Amino acid sequence: MSGPRPRPPTLRRAPTAPVWIQIGWRVLFVLGLIGTAIAVHWFDREGLRDTVDGHISFTDIIYFTMISITTTGYGDISPVTDRARLFDALIVTPIRVFVVLIFVGTAYSFVIRRTWDKWRMSIIQRRLENHVVVAGFGTTGREAAEELIARGRDPASIVVIDCLAERVAEAEALGCTVIQGDASRDSTLEAVRLARAQSAIIAPGRDDTAILVTLTARHVAPDVRLSVIIRAEDNELLARQAGATTVVNPVSFAGLLLAGSCQGTRATEYITDLASAAGRVQLVERRVRPEEAGRPLSALATGLGVRIFRGGQTYGFWEPEAQALAPDDILVEIVPSEAPGRR
Image (cartoon, rainbow, N blue to C red; front, side, top):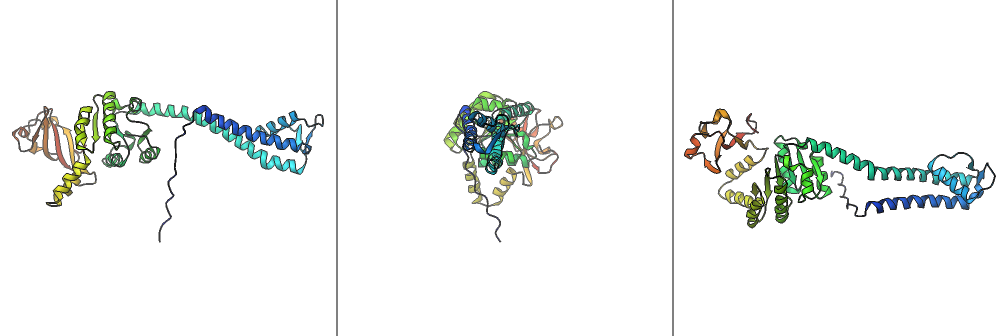
């Protein structure tokens, strides 16, 4: 038996009217409700009684209507016929509720919520340190965030930037810190404290946008590691020139895996295993520990060392340089997923 049908998505669009126009429409709506009540009370004024002078004037109608809408009345003017009482009970009372909700909603939308959001943002910004910024929460950005979470990173330490409210909501549902905005603007990257981040993943979905975001990010945070997704091989050099630390081409990588799978599936499966937190082994990049200096790469106790980065040069495990680790070396090693040395 099939389950319940999923609810269709709702189209949403950010308001484009200025604040004063939005407030103006609400004021006009309230005045329209009050005007309707005044008109009905005037045409049915025979159903009202004034205990002061016994005469119902137009001024009395305005007074009675405003008092009835804003309070429960003072009793000096009161409805005496069934029709007048029904109108007050069934029409004026709902109008009173609508007017209160409109004014409370307006105050919340334009004063309380903005003040609250600014206060919350300042608190979050003060706590942002050593976090990961994900610029673009499409398919690639979402998978990167989910992989980081699977590897043990606190979702709150992942800050997602995207222009679309739907994607921001998806990231927030994962527990990430989110901001809806343009990652190619200085103000957006400064708001997420990019300069204090551990690294940034730039995956907006377009190469030109990715390069622009990379330029902006490198301007805002000269020392932060930037991993950029580029789909056209011709744009990889441009991304590096823009300041990318790492350029990943998913199209080329997929091609390499497909080509390798033609000669056998085991190597491709192992590469996928290395790249995923769900695999049995992991690729780890770290610095040489003090007790490891001077030892060969093959003597690592935490895993299988495969590569050394030293002085801007790269050395494999079979080369002579791998026979003695230096204190400043960067290692790439393969470790079991549950290894204590995994970071």
